[in-house]
Structure formats: C-alpha cells, structure tokens
Image (cartoon, rainbow, N blue to C red; front, top):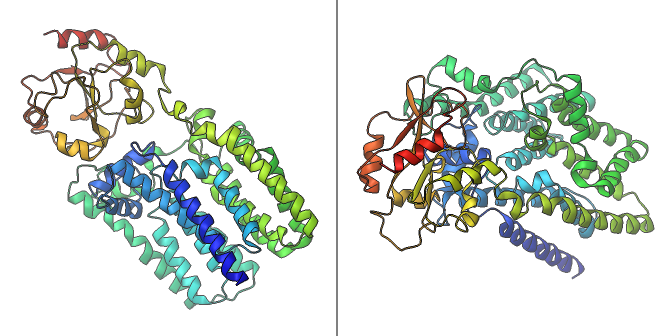
Length: 522
C-alpha cells in the first residue's frame, strides 16, 4: 500500500510538471534556429550546417499534429521531449521520491534548459541521447556497447556535440578495465557508420530541390561543406585566452543555478571525492569532456561576449546535469538531519533562482521589441500601407510583436516570409502562423486585404534573395526559384502593382525609408 501511494504521488507530480511545461511553451512563435528547423522540417528541406537530418525529419512529423500553427507544433514537440527527458532522468536517480524530484526541479531551474524546452530547439533531444548512452555504459554487456555506437552515429544527425560522448565512452572502457577485442572494435565502427548514414538525407533531398535548401549539398564538396560547417568556421582551433576566461566566468553552476544551488552542486562534486572516489572520477571526467571541451576546443568566433552568453550556454547542459546526478549520489550518503537541512536550503535556492533569474529571462516584456530600431522603422512606414512583407531573423521582427504592434500601428498586416517558404498564399500563411489579420481595423475578405506590398530585394550571386527591411546581413542562397515569384504573389494577393527597392552596397540604402514613402505615393 505504501509503495502504491508513492507511485501515485510520482504520477501526480509529473502530471503537474507536464501541465506546467505545456502551459509555458511559446504558442505562436519559434525563435532562433527554431525558425530554420521549422522550415527545413515542413518542406523536408535542409537546415543550416551541419543540417541536422534526424531532427529535421522528426520536425517534419509535427506538421501532421492537428494543433495550431507550425510554430506551436514544433514548440509542443520540444516541450514533450523535455518532459520525456525529465521522466527518464528521474527513473535513473536513487533515493526517495522527494529527493529525486528535487533533482528534477534543479534541472528545470536551469535557465538554459528551461528556455530550450519551450522553443523549437534540438538540444533537449541531444541531452536525452547523451544520457541514454551514459546509463547504457553502466550495463556490463557488449550489446550495449554496439547500441551506443549506433546511437552515436544517429546522434551526429541531431547535433555534432555527441562526439564528446564518444570520447567519454572510450575513457570509460579504459578506466573500467573492460576488454575490447578487434572484432568488437570493428562491430562498433560498423554500427557507428550505419547510424551516420542518416546524412544520406542531405544529397537525396538536395537533388529534389526542396524550397528550403541551405548549402544545396548535392555533390561531395557541398556535402562536406555542410557536414563540417564551413559556412560557420571559426578562426583557429583553440580559443583565445581572454575569450576562454570570459566563457569560464559566464558558464558555471553559480551563474546557471544561482549562488545557493551552485554552491550545493559544486560542494557535492568535491565531497564525492572522499565518499565515492571511483564514481567521482567517472563523473568528473564527463564534466571535463563536456565543459572544458567546449571552453577550449570550440574555435574563436566574431561574436561579442553578450552574444556568446545567448548562444553557447546550451552546450554546457550535459555538464550541469551531471553535477545534479552527482548531488543525487551524495545525498544518499548523508545523515537524515543533514538531508533535511540541505533539502530546504535547496528549495529556497531554487525558488530564488526561479524568481530572480529564470522568470526574468523568459518574461513577456523581454520578448517584445528588443531592438528599438525595429519599432522606429515600423512607426515611419506610411499610414496608407496596409501590408508589410518581410523576411528576417527572430532578433529583428518576431511574430510575437503582433501582440504590441496593433497598439500604435493597427493598419498594418504583417506577413513574415521566413515562416512561409515560397508558399505565398494567405491560406497557407495562416496555417504556418506567418500572416496575421488583426492589424486591420475592418473585416475584409482575403482578396483586397493587401493594398500595397513592400519588398526589399537584393541580389546574391545572381539569385533573388529577400531580406527583412530591418536587417541587411548577407543571407545564403536558399534556392529560391527565379521564375514566377512576383506573379504568384500578385495573383494570390490580388495586387496590380509590384514595388521593389534594390539593395545598394553592404551598408544598405541610406534613403530606404524615403524610397518606401515615394513608392507608396505612386
């Protein structure tokens, strides 16, 4: 009876957790790489290098979920993966239900984990695979070694950082003194290559010329370019010293979980050196591989320190979760009175972190108008313009802005092409969550709702590429068709005229806003 009650408590807690995760994930917009994954998945296309073929195909399945627009579906999929990881991790922890659930709350209090659990990103799935391989290492059966090799190969199609797990697996077999024969090694290589065949998706789909085709990897050179991320290659292999120090200061358990929880986790790791030396070494090497590996081996880049804080934090998630796993192992060895004290100190620290750090990071206000120039440019558009078609990044003009734009520009209908691909009709755009009608005061039919269209055009290598009016960054060739785009827009939207503004130089057109005014006054 006692065991039955505990099981029901666990079920209730995870039901509450599931409801919470579903409640907080973004319902309208997917941010950052989620935009790229959404389009790549929807069109069975190719995302930015290294193209993530496994995740792209999984995202494609979300288009068949009868739930809201595609942004909602990919975010919902990510939220379910996060919930699955938490349940999986909980079942591999030891101790009573409240001790294990404390560890789950610690993971959830990680701002990096939380944000990447409610947006269309792949890092939670990557985390799940890494710890699946880690717990398989605890099984003394060579079949799990072969299975890990296969998972490692598949994992390359989710995120290349699983390579670090391959290094850790080699260390574990050496440290544990397990015997590996030449035949075992050959079988592992076979399953590794078999799993990595997921990358055959790239040339296969490139020859199909999908609407979203980043890098067009239809030959060996372009395939290698995508696989090795040549488009994003950094300068040098090792980080510069000042960059290394900044990363070390920025990415650590104290910054991630708050001072109180960070001290508890770091102290737990050091204490295990005296309680469980072998477990400490195995876990600490995991942290070294996934923490200092990224600090040192990931090359230099042109990002600012502030941009690195937003981009690189997610790579350290495996190390953070391992710290929590070490805390769980130490907690088992403490006396009851010490457990009681640490438990309530941890609860206080988690509550403080949620309130002071986590909730502020995902606050509604922070999502709206992070760039003043976006609002400024929008306010300068002429009043007789009822439609603005843009293509751009989430930093400049996310769809979530629609919550606030109507307060000062209720005459504008916005269609964001980076959620739309080449399907420029209203029915499809509404399905994709890319077009919003609330910017019009009057109820009008689909035809005639657009009185003018502003397109900002530039040419890259002779190809027509559209870009956001707020963003002049160079965009890769997305394999847009050169024929019939404008006619298709006109026929679908019921327009009689085409308005174009040509891109002039890297700095953009100095008279851009003035040209918009002139074109709309024709």
